[in-house]
Picture 1 (cartoon, rainbow, N blue to C red):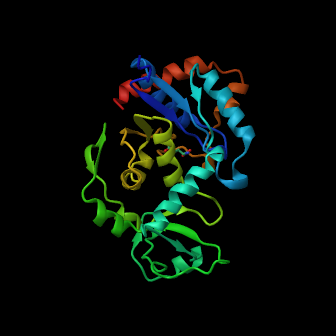
Picture 2: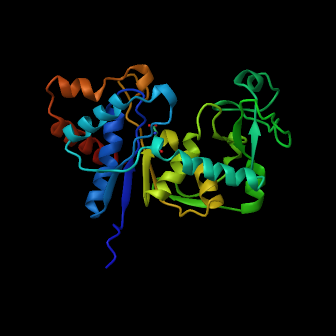
Picture 3: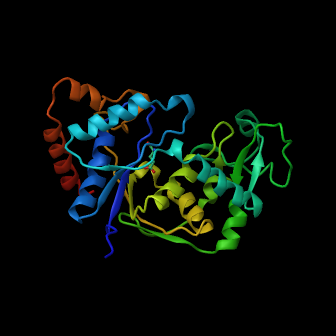
Length: 276
Ligand code: GLU
């Protein structure tokens, strides 16, 4: 008998600060989508941000989700999967689809190159150059080469429809950071496949990242999940909620005795009113 659940979603927070209402919204969204289809809702702790990743935040997240009345199955944290990231990046290096890059942030900022939303688009300065073995180096994906080899790729997005993946706007993205054995793009793509995630739900701020993830899926011959990039909750000034802007923490609300189940219901109502 095949017992694999038909629909698998996940919530994948980084334990580098408190969760806020935006995270609660996102977790409830993924949870309800899975539960309403008799599927599975996973929690994956994305803890590969060096000393910024703290286990006490991960513990706090579990208490927050429980307080909101969610039920989940927790899968291995990213810190337990470093070998799989290294192995995958090694395969791309071996086939010439990735290269080592020793440029510093300062070197890159000083380049006379095109700029995108996140600053200078890396123009491939280190491509074809051999980094010295003792030089700290990141690994970058050769996006043009990957795009030429792969042809047109699409993903299906609940909100945007059928989207043609084109990560060229990012330049040659980093797949292994200098200081870490992976990058968000590489780790999230490999993990979603390893965890059997069939629907990736996350905020619209990560929509652009999916262009990169789609290419990586194809390079590693991984299945392509469906995507829901839901709207973001905004604060009273119309600004996106963010850990770094000190948006009110779920933990403080929980510790002040607020009813988490009621809060979850309000967020569900908001979701159905906005049609997200
Ligand atoms: N770990 C990421 C974050 O906390 C989420 C990644 C994702 O959902 O793909 O922003």
